Image 1: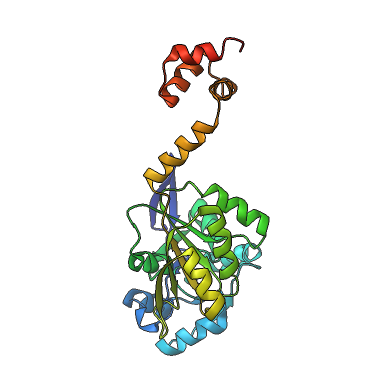
Image 2 (image 1 turned 60 degrees about the vertical axis):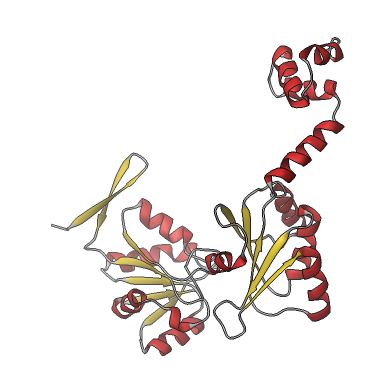
Length: 298
């Protein structure tokens, strides 16, 4: 009889057959190979197969660790079509490690669809934690790390990118993005347009020889990159909109909208006229009677 362990998914109990193979999600170094954990090394030694985003990059790590393993290419373009072949290997009791080129798999890297399928279907999955670039950058950024949102890579489509940035323009949490050096200038220009001036940290070549943290603003960064260019993979840490600035912008917007139009907006949202008048009076900090007089014909 197979040994089993259990986990819960919503209200459903999922039994995991641990007599089948296990998929290990293994965090690897983001630059300095010395950052590999003991547990990650032991896992890579014991598994039967390694799923690698780029087998050439993973081979460098394995050579450093003096480990020889069969590798299967598993990247963004073949991810979904290889799920069933991975499942068959697990059914054959093969233990498998999933690694990306650097850092934690699935974080802006392949693996989500595979793990989602395995978890839903009760396969044994374990995470071997490791270094993550965006956490490393946030810790050194000097920008509020109490609450933050990780956005990863923005769309290469300019219209979609700007739409996303506009939706984040009122975000009060610290925002973290990944970006390539050849796109960083246009990204910073789009961000300045959407966010206004902000305090930012540009972290590049993390844990490598030329690691650098640039504490600056959009305007200064754009000027510097135009003059000197920039190299290496980049993590951008952007301060969120302050609560004071958010309130200031809210009040400025309110001052530009007439009492009557504001009541109309509230009524379109589903409020009765009486409720809308009460809300607008509170928003404008004026007596309800004044609002009522403005809206007699509504």
